[in-house]
Image 1: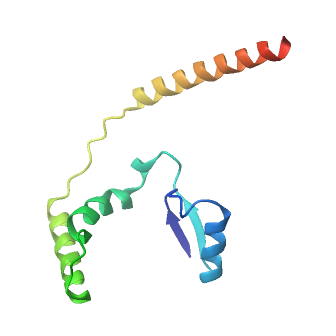
Image 2: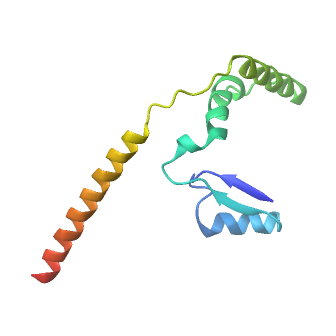
Length: 116
C-alpha cells in the first residue's frame, strides 16, 4: 500500500517512514515533490473542504459529519470545472533558462574563488 503525502513537517524524513512502517508494515510513504503543491490534486480538493466543512468542528455526531461530507462532495462535483493553467511551456522554458544562467554564474564564481 502506498501512502502519498506532502512534505509537511510531521511527514518528512526517516522518522515518518519508520512510524508508518511500525503501524502498517505493508505501507510505503511516498512524498509529493517539494514546492510543487500545484501537482497535489488531493490538496486542491481538501483545502476548501477543510475551510468550508470541517472548520469549525461543532458537529453533534459522526452521522452529521458524514452528511456534511456527502453534501460538500455533491456540491463540488456539480460545480467543478477544469483548471485554466496559466503557466505555459514558454514560461517553463524561460524559467529553466534563468535557472541555467544562475547556476552557470554561481559555478563560475565558485571556480574563481577556488582558484584564488
